Length: 297
Image (cartoon, rainbow, N blue to C red; front, side, top):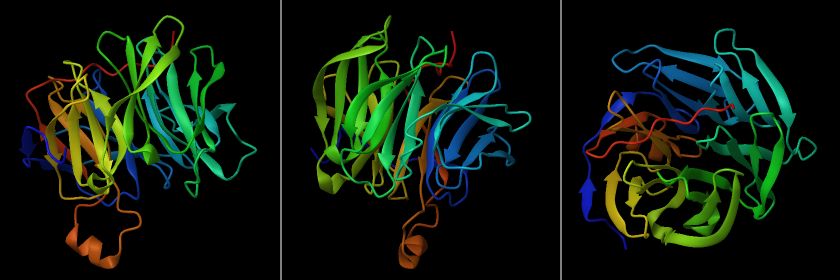
């Protein structure tokens, strides 16, 4: 399919800017703020809706994803592995090196499951196929390899009943589903939820709404798609930036879909045609999302 049942274009620019690769948005229900990263710049941003001020932590190396910790602060998937970050001081402590001897790789997208485990994967800097993996970081800081021969480990999400996990290996042009053992954090029965045609863009980050539908960002496609739990395309959100990277629900009722984007690699002409590339977008939706899971026991 090339379109959904609906085709939305209504949006606003939450935070203007030209992030190289804005990614990994998460909503903090406690503070009412949104956090996201700029991967190659090694930056973590925090912003409160209704204001223009953005606070930033400089990580010192590329940062692929972050998650809130139950004990305070953040856990992050940085270039060299898993790190803990103090948001007040900005101190970054690498606690669990991952593939640190493979300088051609870095960590990419990640997310927490409901039991407080942080999942994040790796990819090659030159996007070579099959050299990445997907890892699980447990609250006791034990790292387990879950999948190997991954090309670009990307979007992660869980169904509301915690029995299904969704995963994107971007060059595969698809969203895959697994049976999820929530108690042990294990995957089985990998299957294809939805194949995405190349001309629509490459699947990137994703989130799952309270009805169990999957929202996925399309890199190069300038759109967010919503798929049903059976893989039917039911909605499309179009935005004025081709390189959309990820999305999450936020706001007081979690009905605001926040979408990150990238400006990296665009030609001068493309930047003129896409003045909002790298901005953070917001789309108001009828369906709410879930509270963001936090890392820790």
